[in-house]
Length: 592
Image (cartoon, rainbow, N blue to C red; front, side, top):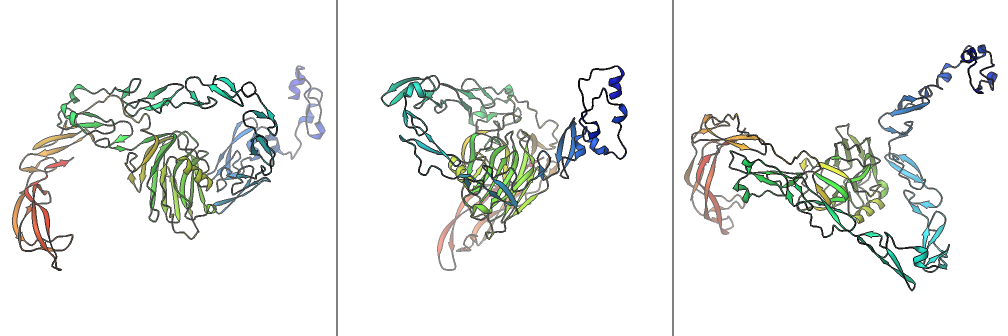
């Protein structure tokens, strides 16, 4: 470089060498080029580090370094580590739970906080009260600070100790949102504009309280007005107009007596004697009676009867969110189980014990706030809890306490909790943040059984059905499942819910495709003693009974009631009403 500068006397300013000592403060233009040659046994690694930051091994042994420009790099951390240089291990201290500058120490699944002066508590969350013996005047409120306090003055006063009287309207300007202030003796009145209320006109009136949004629409509060966010299939200012487009041939009078629920739309496919319910977003089932997927919005939650953890309990949620925080589920008073999102990862808190200091923590290695669907499965088996996220390797925590399982029978919550329950859970360190989940539960399962969010035993708050665009369109294209059917000696019966069909066989035929000759099925009379399976008592004598005789497909089609006098071994007597077959036939319909 020195030769290149000297060759044509190029302008180099006053460039000087910083080192080594022999060349320190030498000019590139005047220093001999031979002095810039490296001596023997020079440290090549030290030179290369100036151009490649990864040569300094900044990620240590816990990550892989990737150069991303001159003197810059990125560390790709191994599972279980995080940080700019992969210097931190994911353990009970993940996310630094200690507050107010407290230092966290992890040990065997738990953590301990060492607090700074002026703070105390399990998480250093308690600021020592400096308001004892305060000198605030005129009814001022003392606000505790860190090793100090300040006086919060009431309207009409100012000063360090609130000792100075004020002109409320001119000096304090208390009225908000353009309201006019009218002074009174020792007080004031704010004349609020449309849409605002309270003493200072600072509260936006909830115009949704008495809204008339129709058909499950979501009300959005404005200033002095509101708007309706319509469910799929509806439009108009109040979402009162159906917009679902159905072909003419599906309209039928049978829909006049349909029992489609939850705003499901009834139609009768061509060639079918039955109607089909087309469900709104989030609902499923023949009558749209089950709510499978839901969206959680502002302070949403689902309250269900408490779980019994004396038996193995499996909770599985398929969810998606872009938020890095929010409660997934919780149950417990002192002993508890909780799952929440914390800094984008799943955090499990568990303890069968009654002391808050026995909580065990488990964090996911991967983040889940990428708006993509993720599946979380939590298995609670007595003292053991396991977590599987997106088919990853199961991870476990185990309680070494005396309690064998969580004994709480309090309510079980999905997605959040009422405010008082959230405050209590945070005070007992079950959760880190009180934020409700915001996003979608595509499906939830309790012990492998689908959770119905429309169950009558649930209490829900601010819950919207469906997850936005879940694949339901405003128009419907129908195909006939009976096209190319293989029913040999019977009628094809289409099923437009499952888009398959079944064969209803003619008399004398049976089988899935009605291709087999049927066997006999008759109702036969006989006399015998009748025994009550509930009490073990028998009839007083032989009675005339009937039964269906044939193969396993031979069943009763019509029955009648018969009253029988019964007698027990202890001479107790009573009458029993039973159903006996009048007509028997074979079940001819078979699902393909």
